[in-house]
Amino acid sequence: MLKTINTYGSPVLRDIALPVTSVTPEIRQLISDMFETMYAAEGIGLAAPQVGESIRLFIIDLHPMDAKEGRRVFINPELLEFSDEKDVYDEGCLSIPTVREDVVRPTAVRIKYQTPDGEDRNEWIDTFLARVIQHEFDHLEGVLFTDRISAIKRSLLKKTLKKIADGEIEVEMSENYQL
Ligand code: NI
Image (cartoon, protein in one colour):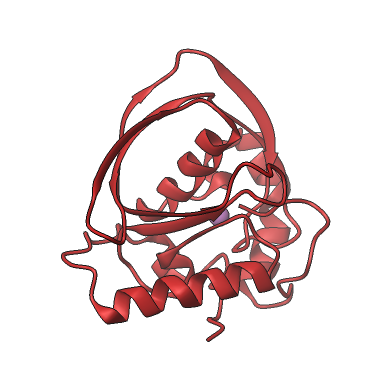
């Protein structure tokens, strides 16, 4: 079932999400709905708070940009370590339609998380996936990528962000990847 994607200004995007205590049938359904919603919106990553569920879970599928990648589900993720090396990418977000801005982030992270089957994983990730993980992790902390740009750039975006918050800009398909 398609979920509604909450956009900028929606309070749930600013909440700190709560841990997932167990992977119930409802959580499995949510994961399935999130994939359906993400593919329909042509996104590559989606966090539960974006569909109104303030829990620590996000999904990623980088297959459109990397044939070796596929569906990934991260439950109760923790970022344990970051590379010193950083890079820049113009990020977009399904919750902030039409906006893209350069964001600087570490190029690699160590992430600990659980799979839907209850396995604990601990991985050092040094590909583009590391950026998407950091973007989605931010959603669980109530942080949006527009919080990570300069104050000057943010003030230039003020009108656009207000329009999104006022519902004047609809979520639309983009030729660029939305995180
Ligand atoms: Ni996002």
